[in-house]
Image (cartoon, rainbow, N blue to C red; front, side):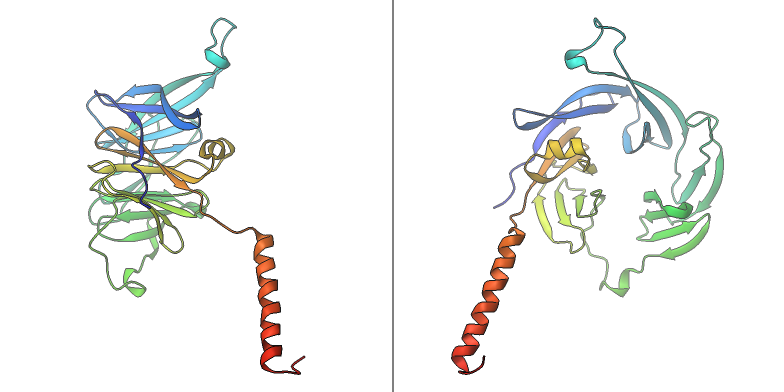
Length: 289
C-alpha cells in the first residue's frame, strides 16, 4: 500500500526568517509550533548545522553563527504555561565556504564572534561543494558537484571515492539532498522535483516514497533524533523524517514499524523444522536412527 501524503507541520510566512520550531505530540498526533524566528533580511537560509548550543546558517555567500541559551523564568509571575523555559538567541557573521574550496576557521575562546580567524584554505573540487563534514583525527570529507567525494588531512588528499569499481556508472537520476539516521540504519532522500524517500542504509532497499511531496525543490531533510524525547515522539513508528522545500513548507514523513517475529517464535520454528526433517528421513530411510 502506498504511503499517505505527508502531514504538513508548518508553513513559513514571508519575509525570510530562520524559524525555530518545537515538535510535540498532541492527542496522538505530531504537531509543530513556532518558538522563535530570526530575521535574515533579503537572504534565504539554504543550509544549517547544529552543534551543542551553536547554529551555523548558510545564507548566500556568508555564514551566520547563532548561539542560543535556555533561561529559567525569573519568578512565578513570569513563567509560561507548564513552567516552560525561555530561549534567547544571539548571532554573529563570518565568511562561509566558497565554491570549490574549503575554508577552516579556528575555534578559540572567542568563538563564535567576529574574531574567528581563517587557518586553512585550499581548492578541493571543480565547482560548488555540495556537502562537508568533519571526521575523526581532524579529517575533512567533502562532496562536490564534480561527482567527487574526498577525504582530506589538512590540505592533503587522503583518499577519494572510486565510483566505477562497484557501480557500472553514475545513474541519470540523482538525489540532491540526503540525511542519515543517527544509528546509520536509514537514509532519507529529497529530490529537485520535491519527492521524498527513505531507504535502508546498507542495502538501499526503498521503504518509503512519496512522489512530489512538495512539488518543488527539497532544500533539506533530517531524521527525528533517536534520543529519549525523540523516541517518545515517534510512538509506534520506526522513524520520522522532516523535509523542507522552496515552497516554505515543513512536512513530516512517518515510517511505520515493520512487522517482525519474536525471537522465541523463531527458535520454536527452527526446532520444529529440525524435528520434521528427522521424521522425514526416518520415513524415507527406515533404520536411519
